[in-house]
Length: 85
Image (cartoon, rainbow, N blue to C red):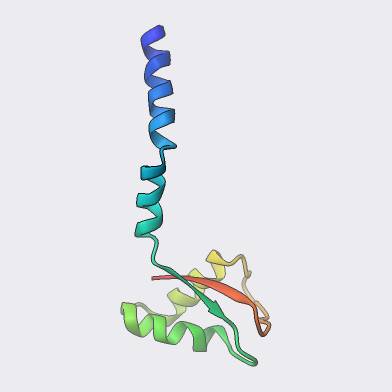
């Protein structure tokens, strides 16, 4: 029983070490886009789709999900959106 408990503690400590978190952050290729006046998700997603070779609709969906925007979002000037490549 002590071996199982020690193994569990080791897994927990190993998963919370700074180097494992740094690895996750380093692999995240996110940018912050600040919405301009009258800018649409289509306009924001277009360059991302071109750069990544994805369908623009998939990029729009990813932006909606990553930013909790819902299915019919209204963007506001100055709003910050996380965009992951």
